[in-house]
Structures are given as C-alpha cells and as structure tokens.
Image (tube, rainbow, N blue to C red; front, side):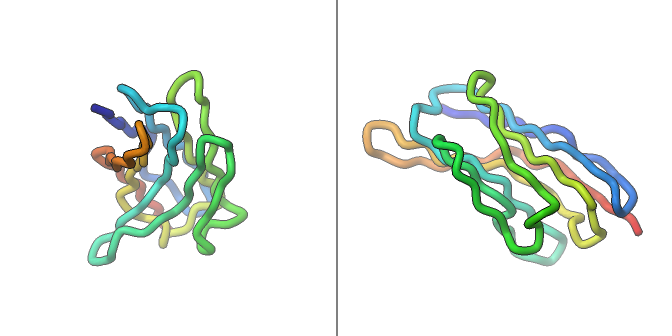
Length: 119
C-alpha cells in the first residue's frame, strides 16, 4: 500500500511563491509517475504537472514558466515550486502517484492541501 502526504499549502498574495511537498511511503517501485493536480471550487480536477521516474516533466499551459515539479528520489518526495502565483491558482492541490509493480499500474491520491492566492 502506498500513502501520499502533502504539505506546504498556504494563503499568499498574488505574485508570491509557495513550495508544495508530497512524501510517498510504501512500495513505490522503480517505475512510477508522480503528479500534482488541482481542483478549484465548482471546477473539475485538472493536471498541473507530472514527472516520471526518469525525470521527464510535463506542465499545464496555464502554469508553464511559473511552476516547477521536481523530485528527490532518495526521500520519495516530489515537490511543486510555484512562483508568480495568481488568484486563479487558488485550489486544493493533490499529489498523485501511478505506481507500476509487476506490470500492474495502480493510482494513489493524497488528501490535498489548500492554496489560496489573494489579489
């Protein structure tokens, strides 16, 4: 069983920065994809950024150039560095992991952390 615990959410002014962390416990294997999603009130959950075990990344167009996803494999931790925050970045941010073990892929979610950006 894999557990994901996020931290780092806070309330900030527009233009500020935050760093979110997600620590994974359990067997995350050697092949996995870690991602951050967000869900604003009344909206669907959307992908913000992802990183695979090889370090390749992908970002939503709305955060390119402002957000950076990176991981510390030795700590089983993935981070989301968020700069130049905008009010539209306000959402609950969720960590997601897709773990491949013995050829079977399973998905896991964290409990979410609130990010609020005021203008």
